[in-house]
Amino acid sequence: MVLTLKEISQKLHRAQVTAQETDQLEEELTVEQAYQVQKMTLSARTQNGETYIGPKLGFTSKAKMEQMGVDEIIVGFLTDAMDHSPEEPLSLHGLIHPRIEPELVFELSREVVADPDETVESLAEKLENAVARVAVGMEVIDSRYRDFKFNLADVVADNTSAAKFIVGDAQPYPRDLEGLGVEFLIDGKTVDTADTNAILGHPKEAFTELAKMILKYGFEIPAGATILAGSMTAAQWLKPGQTVEARVESFEPLTITVTD
Ligand code: OOG
Ligand code: MG
Image 1: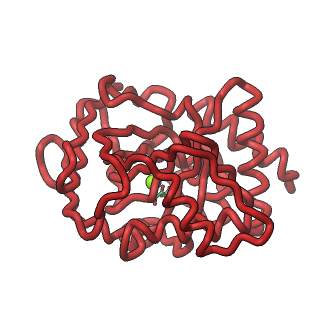
Image 2: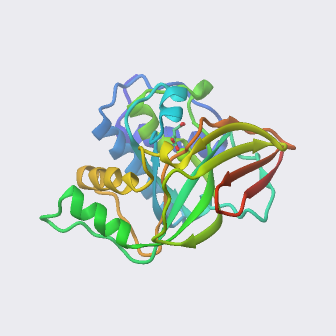
């Protein structure tokens, strides 16, 4: 069976809404087509009342690329419906097979638009100059595909597994983010460690990579946008009853408790 891009978007959207995993796609999408599918899902979600709040980067660290067997940077979209307050326990209801990962989050003060003659360098600079705050975050990813298995185009079509995100302690930006220690804990035990340079060698590089993707695929960066820079460690399976903590040197720890 060969589905249209619209039908693929509908199938993945339905899998997300009903929390039912779906088979890997039979269609061999190009990455360009996969971003078109993603855009269609974003339109469907905004038509249902959700608000787009910014992009998320994926596979910006070696740890994530190795874990998922994908070696190119990907971009997905975030909506207000995915924004989970750290004050509230995180319910796994409505999720298929969620994982969680520690991230850095950039909060922008103003809209960023690429001019017709924009270069990667000038756009990266614009993005970084628009950042007002940087925070510790966690992302809950939940592939809609059976067994959390996908190739590059399939994960892009599935909005890069985006499900929920949690934003913790934020500090004014600019500030130095070079090589800060990262610790990821479950139930008080360290399950992984890294440093902030796990993101592309330096977290600032996230702006360059995002600029490239904006020039290629046209993601919008609204005023007040939230940007996830990509996980610094491998992701961990989420289970009810867990307490998950992300520690980044010089920030307050971010903790979330998990319920079913
Ligand atoms: C895709 C999402 C990757 C990250 O931070 O690297 C991502 C996945 O692992 O399912 O969000
Ligand atoms: Mg992520």
